[in-house]
Length: 89
Image (cartoon, rainbow, N blue to C red; front, top):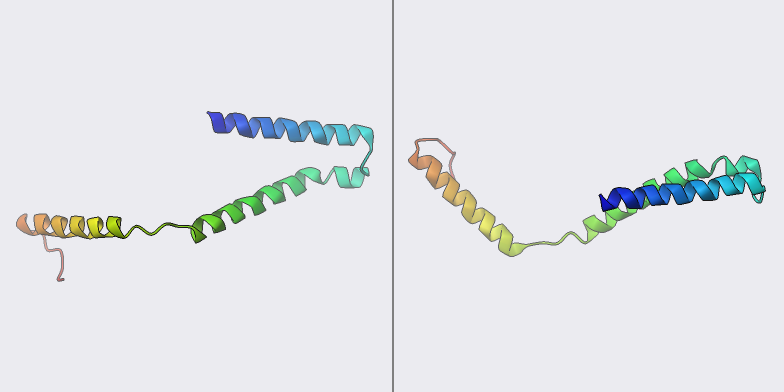
């Protein structure tokens, strides 16, 4: 719920700035009408940047990998006991 409130507040603030720029004519109208498109493109670039940063900082968890391998071995043993062919090791 908090995330929705942040997004709505950002949209309201951006809309207020955009409308005020349209009314005051500080920026030429041809540029002012393109501001929402620039905003959407900027959000897309920001999203791609955050995905890239998240991938670069993706943590490796060697302890969790060992636990996962143990779980796989246990599952294979359980399935072999039940008569399921799980392939060769």
